[in-house]
Length: 67
Image 1 (cartoon, helix red, strand yellow):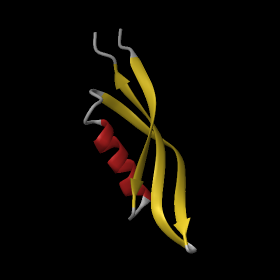
Image 2 (tube, one colour; image 1 turned 30 degrees about the vertical axis):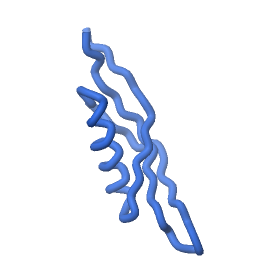
Image 3 (tube, one colour; image 1 turned 180 degrees about the vertical axis):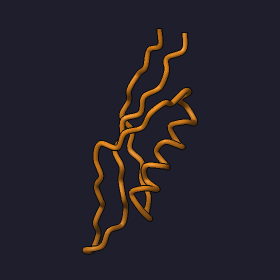
Image 4 (cartoon, one colour; image 1 turned 135 degrees about the horizontal axis):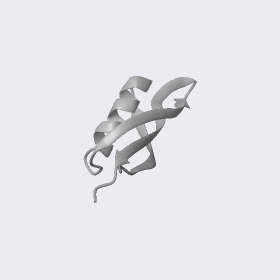
């Protein structure tokens, strides 16, 4: 039987939502093993002086628990 854990992460990028999501998974993979799925749950943009400055992707990632 396989057991998975789900955690929330947030990635950021100055370029795009896609890069923000990719950055989140890449950074999480540095400390979390066996990532199986990533689901974007929310996008938002930081705005300064009426211009977008930072794209954010909030995500759930699931990974297999090692026994």
